[in-house]
Length: 557
Image 1 (cartoon, rainbow, N blue to C red):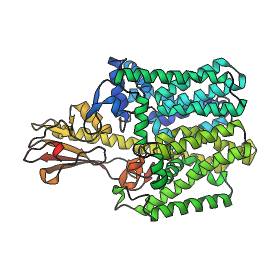
Image 2 (image 1 turned 60 degrees about the horizontal axis):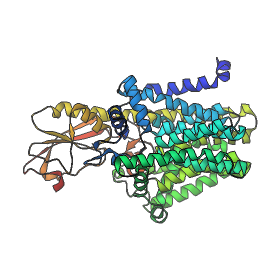
Image 3 (image 1 turned 135 degrees about the horizontal axis):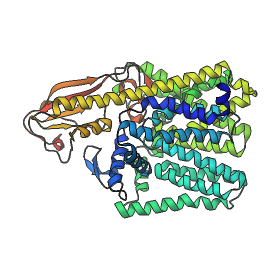
Image 4 (image 1 turned 135 degrees about the vertical axis):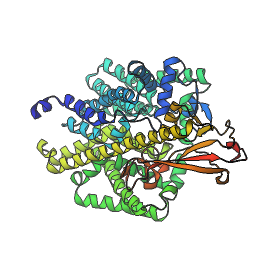
């Protein structure tokens, strides 16, 4: 069996991917999943107008084009999946297994051009927490990554073989990746830089990069005709608003440290392998400098001061986890620097631009640091790990030493634990919505709810209506459900409401991906400084309130 798998590596990777993801096919929709599902359902009826409907996502009803900041291609894919398989959680996640498998196989195919053990590089990618967690969502990140990887595969092979068909296919795949997630625009300068380093000057290959440019211009014209604005520019403005480059450089030094933390934790296998990848003295120096930087920020209040829910929790334990993963993040960035220093070839420059560019985007430009924005570097880091191991050990058998196997296994176990925690969190959110509505949504009083993400999806599926700060007129005896762990909540003055019940549902117990009290926030670092965190995770709680006279509207609060 072992010999058969070694001669059929793609089959092995497909089986490993299925084994890792099939247990999570029933995961409830959560976080930003509803935005993609709602758009897909709308596309099924109005395929030429993907964002032509309204949604209450920020506390009041706005056009969907303002609520979402991603292009619609993956929603068209989900609409096709919904037509064929139905709209259940199982059906949607089953449809998204294909992009996940394509990403793993794309890593393998790409790694063949960079190292001698592509199977190991693909396995490291699969076992990254950022990959497994992202692969259990209904969002656009993993489909974009799959297109990104295969675009690179065809581009590199097209350059090596001077094959215009492969280069044309790469141009089309880059275009599709951009229409899946705008970040894929960075593929254009990435492959251009690689080609210039390889060929020294622009030749016929430059013409194929006009394909995504033309597609991007056409998409802008279409969205402007439909919605009166270029949606790409709208997404850029949203990215810049919360955290500009100048603000980061002058007042947000903690953002860089948080990005290191998310990198080291999201790609934990590289952190676990650090003692193998680096000499003890170098690792000690890197760790000391990183810890000193982090402790300085912690003592100055520059890291945890904005995280209110952490107050009263074991801050020292959160700080320890931050320092640990930040060391791993520095080691990952150092891999790229060491690789380009030692090899000085086109492939090493491609990897360094790929990793450092994505890291800087997440740390400096993006509206928040999150696991999803760092996902694109997972395959590159897997390749860099193998290249480093090959350079250090030389012999193939040394790559599979006991230490390497233990570190890789520990990374895979951690990734599965984190993915299970995110799965449990989504289940708890769905359970709170159902329990709350069953008990209070069918009574004689009017029932409203606050909150978004998965809770909104399941509340509205049951027939409840979200509170709208600009449109809802509340009356005495109205019941309002308010989740504790959610976003865009409208504050209600305590003297105007009474608590009927606190509905509590346990979620993950000792590791969390989205709980501010333990410092975890995989999806947006503004709610926690860690991509995941170990600790005593509180349950999901919904406060059921009743409005007392006099009647008010949310705008008065």
